[in-house]
Image 1 (cartoon, rainbow, N blue to C red):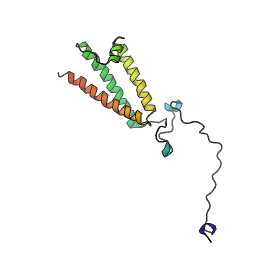
Image 2: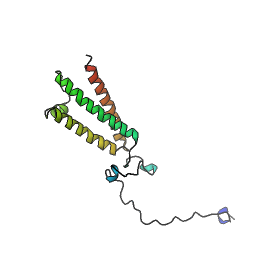
Image 3: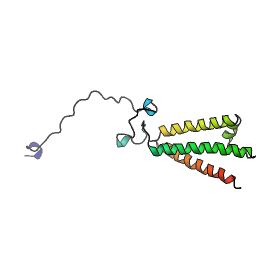
Image 4: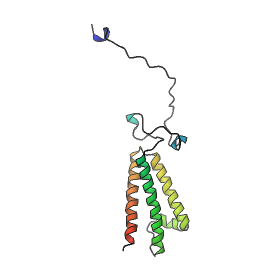
Length: 153
């Protein structure tokens, strides 16, 4: 007699019915949980780890976003100082923003970068967004180091 037919066979207990699947749609990019009350820090299943959205973000991600934001502000500050000392703006987009005045330049530049950082943060589980955050952190850091080097030339 096979073992499964013997007395040692223990069938799995049936799962209790919990009603219809409540996950009719995938997690949205932005919801009220994105800003308060979220519970989802990572994907539940291995196949969902890439290209999924969550509503809680890790400390390392927030530190990276904060670093890029601070480097953006420093870039704006150094740009204005160098322009006052006779420098020119090489970036055509920043040059166009400078036509709005100093405060307009800073507000527009910080606003545009903030929107870009928000998009990259929400898409943190997408490889291109993670690469974009890392590349922008490196580029802004190098740019600020370049600005600092101009003071010693």
